[in-house]
Image (cartoon, rainbow, N blue to C red; front, side, top):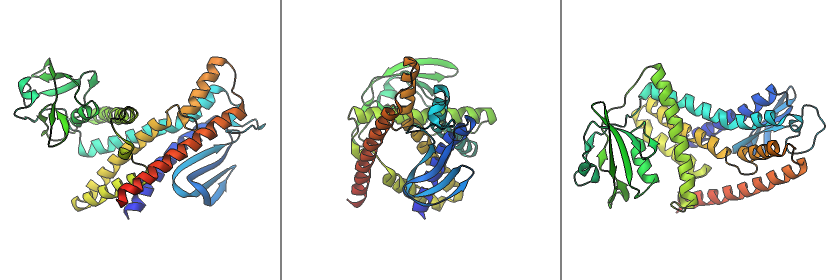
Length: 344
């Protein structure tokens, strides 16, 4: 059951991503040869109009295959015959639709469950927050240059910036105050702490506030993704901390099983929360300037705008092929690591 749920979540997010490419391609009058879900051999498909809609064997990934996308074509409706701005819009639409999907799901969660305001619920004795004069009821507004909207962002920020001095901006009785805190390392948790605790119940707002906090949620998820990449590049985290499809399936399964005793609503909300993370993550990762990803294509188009000349189609295809091969190799490494962690 949990594997099926994970596949359905993956499939829905991927379909929405590819739908972005598809709709903008049709709007730009580009011929779409195939809209596929999954990778590898085709299991089945049907043709509607000029497009074949197909399901492939491996349930991770997908594609919106356009005429003249990776090869030369003389068709007037080919992707490579369109203006650079049209091609950029088509490519950007996939990740953008991921952010739209993440936003809609975040709004649904906040409308039903509310949001956790960054209000201090308690001060831990012997920690720097106590010495800095922070008090229960203070609302944390900013940590260094990072604007805080949810209480959970406090612990996430400290995890992403271990041991860094933190300039805390907070509100007390309508007055904005500042203090600098040096986080203290906690042996038990293995993390740096300010010494503040949550405790305030989740809050619900009106329509406008719910929409605004939906945007804040996407900003938070994008921040996590970029910071995680930074920590991976700087070796603050290792490859063992990276999860691929198998690891994510396990997380979704564990979330389903732990939420089931609390009722259907908690199951739905927790699975939606994971889906927000996955959709926003997919949007960010696809915008990275890596060949074969949407961001790599956008980079090529930006170079084309600067040069005033389109890149040789054969060369562009080779660059994307090499990038795809490297990406698949990386995915195999992550997949093997996921399986190893589960088995061991």
